[in-house]
Image (cartoon, rainbow, N blue to C red; front, side, top):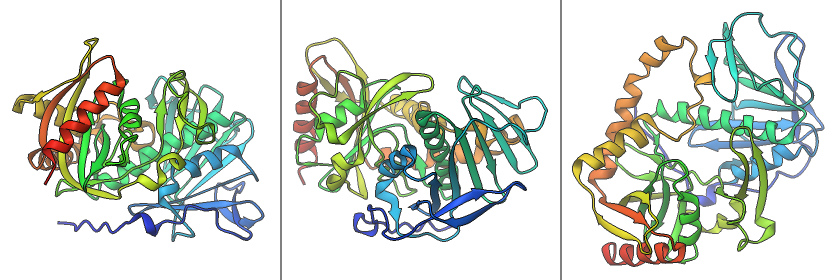
Length: 373
């Protein structure tokens, strides 16, 4: 059995841009990448998955991604996945003339040997080379460069850490006195808004807005990228910590930057409480014990399958159904980690009411009472 070694603390990461002259990565005509001085590159280490970002000077998409992954920023890393953002029209000259193998609402993809080509409706093109390893993303649109790279990173980080038995769960995660508080909701269920309300209470630290990692012992590791808020629900947050992006499928979204909660991140927390969440139009919030069947249903949907999580099949799969079948062991490993988390936690059904502040206060009071020791 492979030993999982994770020794991260918030003090381990340098979240400022390294001083001095940086390097850029340049795509050569024969398909390889080399470093040249002049343009700035940033390095990151997400629990062993190392990558670098580079591109044109002062590229906004790079700064946005660096803000998202600031918790994991390092002065330098060895043998990173090289990610190059190019502000240019997509160049299809080297794309094979063959049918696509993967179709999603946002893109189509095809593979040849160790390279995967992903086209975003003519607005962006990504070329992923597994041998380098590297990816070059071309677009004239800042939001396309940003979102395509962000989703690629979620895919690759998830696949890399799956192989090391550290798995994502689709949940909001905070911490109270070193114990993890997870709220599992369907997509669009209000995880981010609930997190933003709970963080107003100084008793809570931050782990993740959407997808913390679960280790084989059930402990929860931070994945603090950003908080996503719907337009109109962001007025109480300082402007210097917000930005708006236009997403490929779902329209505009206001993001609350890592800088807003940077001082509140808890790198790892022991199991505490898992809330299985739903929303209602009732005036008050209700918290009641959850049954075993309901708990297992959540384990399967929100961790084993990962409903609501971006799994990036266009980057992961090479042989369609054959490759997917070979991932069955990953699903079982995810389920084992989820079972350990749930068994070491108090599991309750959480039904949110209409009043956001009342919802948050009910959870705060409940957590204080049940995790007082």
